[in-house]
Length: 83
Length: 83
Length: 150
Length: 150
Image (cartoon, rainbow over all chains, first blue to last red):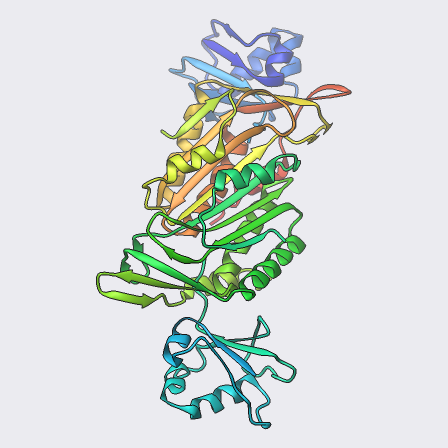
């Protein structure tokens, strides 16, 4: 699975993207976040307040309970501050 | 008193402005309209639906009950349609 | 007072650039009103805007002062044309500048609503069937009412 | 789709003129957002706008389609810049064209409210004290909420 990170999520994790083989028991975005947090301090820092971090599957906003089956790319980022 | 007319009020009366000596018993704009209507068909046509016609005393919108004392110019015109 | 009544066309881009330069504004809203072939009285070939010289400037200045009282504007401009216009010609321009977008949107909206119902301008449209004065719209009076009901 | 994401500045006047010519519109509303020295994190010297390439275009196109569904727009343009900007630089431009002013004002307002909270852009401000990410504003989420509560 291709994961992409933006803004301070990217800075805390220390990279803009990565390809990771996910365990088969990860069904939702929330599952993925919980699993990422076990991978090290940088992920723990990025998802410290996990309800703040937003997610997009294949460039469309999704909620934590969204199913990731069939996704080719999942992105994590802070609330948007454009405009 | 200087009277000024605009748009279809001007067209119906047949002039853009005139100077008229007003009878002393005219107190309000409504009095003035009632008196003008006695001056001929053209005024009657202009003020046929007198509630539609708007008035301004010295370039400020006023209501029919406004007192004309001290006015140097009174204008009559249809509802505005600019913008 | 940033109010102008003129027969000449205006250049919206030039006016925006002039007001915005060095203003410190974070939000600029503009409204441009144009003459439409699909007029109020049918398909039109032209329209003539009559106005009350002097009062038009004063009334727009009063509206501008009221807008500045209601919203924290950094700058504000109203231009209204008079004379004969054809479809596609600009009629009116309102520009509002503020730190944040709510004030700029609110003031531009307010200025247009009031301008429509209180600035002394009258439109006469020309079509194949002749000339006809445009009647005031109930919807414009309703739009103006929004600002006094709270 | 009339959506552009670019690092380069845009010319509001040129964009308005291009969209308006021959459009038949009676109302053109524009919103321009600019970088302010009085930033969200204090007095700033610059800001950098990070974005999610691809998703930014798609999200703005979705918003544009939604605006066109809700209001009878004759045309519509959204430009959003990315990269490093200094105070006075333009950030975003929204232009809406319609026959009457309500639709143009409504759609421009809607586009800005949604753009602020759903287009994948993030601001990092630079000041004497260093760099800091801008936090999302509750007022922006509240503004967005206006469009779904009826």
